[in-house]
Image 1: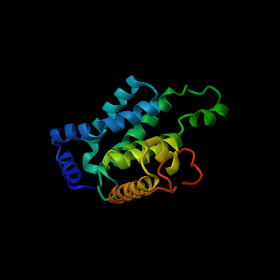
Image 2: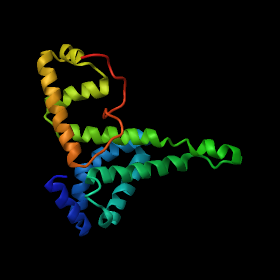
Image 3: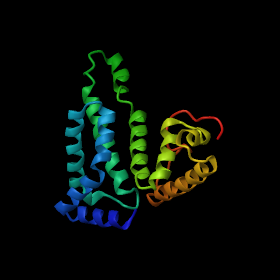
Image 4: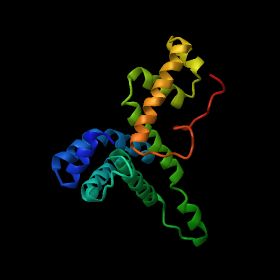
Length: 195
C-alpha cells in the first residue's frame, strides 16, 4: 500500500468527511464499473454504489491495511453488496425442491472474476500507458506478442521487453497490496499459443 493510501485509510478511520470524498474520487469509477457490469443495471449500480461508500464510512475503523489494500477492501464490499442485490432479484421459491437451484443464480465465481478484472484495470491504469496498452491487448483481447507487434507496428523485441517490464511493475503493485491469486494468469479469456 502506498503512503497516500495509508494516510487516506487513517483519515477514514478518524471519520474525516474529506477522506470519504477522496476515497470516492479515487476508487468510485472502479467500483461503479464493477457494479454496472455485475448488475447489468445502471440505476441499481448507482444505488448499490451509495451503499458501498456508506459502508466504507461506517466500517472504516474495521479496515485492516495488513490484510488488503484499501481498493481491495472497497471492492470486497462492492462484491458483497452486488451479490446481495442479485440475490434480492431471485424470486422466493414456492417449491422447496427448487430453492437450491435458485440460490445458485447469483454466481459468486462470476462476481469474483469481475472484481479481479476491475482490480486489474485499476492497477493497469497506474502503469506506463504504453506498457499498460500492451498488457491489455494480451489479457483482454488474448493477442499473442506477435499479434500485438503486428497490430501496433511495434517491433516484436520491443513488445516483449515492454511486456516484461509492465508485468514486473504490475507484480510489484500486486505484491505491495499483498494480493494472492490461485491461478497464474490475472485475467480470464483464451490463452493464445506461442509468442
